[in-house]
Image (cartoon, rainbow, N blue to C red):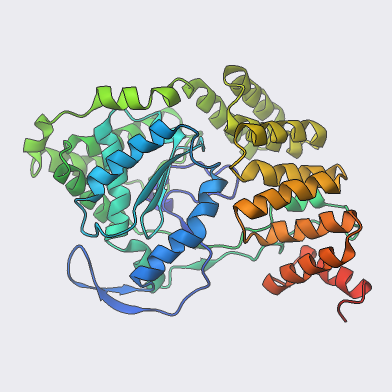
Length: 442
């Protein structure tokens, strides 16, 4: 599922929407033809199996962090993994390193990287009704992995280069100007791939086959599609559904129903697992009003209705004060209104709630720079860097922090490191100018 069957409302501008597989790979030469794992025919691929796995290792952690990391509920994550493992054992590529986590993101989405690293947002999990629908959701993602759709997309030259971090930065020529504006834009170099309508149909068919093999009723796929059809009708402004580009929602639901009533009819006598699902996801469903408020807040943020967004986030925090996502979102909302001191308080609270998740650390660092506190900024940015290394933007901002602390040599090292990754944009101009003025470059 992708842009063509988008389940997400992409409100922060840094998430992969439905089936936009994100990876920080340079465009690779075509690997050539390979046998399809699911059909045996020849398919044109741009990645080997080892490269598919490497994409997951290199990029998935960053994307999962963009979606605010796995929920802090081991039992929920273990439950998701158990369902995933039950289904992935019956796929065409059981040897792939599948992994599963429920993410703190509120938007309605699930996605996979080409090696099988999957994320399911809490926003969709609380809307599912039973375990069979969850198995259908995961089965569809496995369908993309098993049909090697990501590799085929790259092989068919469907990869687009996103601008290197820093290209559109609003930094001024002063030492401190524009830091908050640039902080959230750095480190966003990526490649995007989207799936075709035929890819989506194939993933549906494979997912339904896998879930039936695993002992679930095929009606679970029908239920999943019906949920999305209903949501599209009930809240079209709130949700870009999985079929936003191509209105395939009823078509794919009807296809799934035909298979459930025909080829897989015998499976529909099986238990859908509603009670087990409800028990296993109860901790998340208890905070559904918080998730709903966050969704409305993010929609308001997308429309730059910051006052309305702030009201929704306050509602979310009143319901669940120690919710990591709500605190991060409130910090971002206040930052957008130039209320940096208040925003920093929420970012610091988020750090305390979930210290091992990087995003709050990065946000706190950016805000501290805006408040001209380079020591606090560096500490937060360095913590982010240790948890999730490789973010060019954080390297630049650490350089700014070190400069503010009077540590010119260390700042120069960071600026040089940043320039080795990109020489485009205001941030690069600033770094180059500093190195020249200090005598480290001509």
